[in-house]
Length: 67
Ligand SMILES: [Zn+2]
Image 1 (cartoon, rainbow, N blue to C red):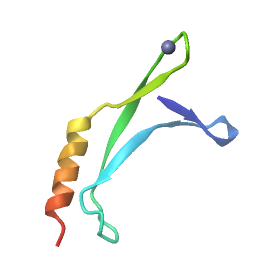
Image 2 (spheres, rainbow, N blue to C red; image 1 turned 30 degrees about the horizontal axis):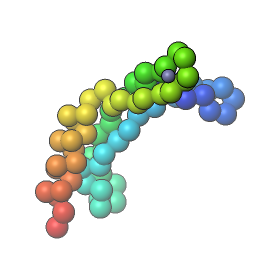
Image 3 (tube, rainbow, N blue to C red; image 1 turned 135 degrees about the vertical axis):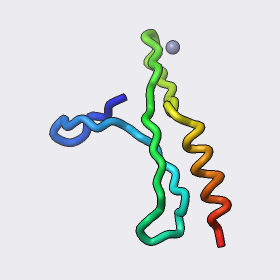
């Protein structure tokens, strides 16, 4: 999935979960790329993370990292 930003530069859309969100530097960010399904009739778009299990694991880790 691509997002056309300024100057028509293409960027691949990603989502991220930080395993240690409270850390200053080493947040241990986990990314997943996104894919989209688009209805050819009305243009409705659904977005999916390609690796939801990795995001869930990172989220669970972030909960256990809270001090
Ligand atoms: Zn439709």
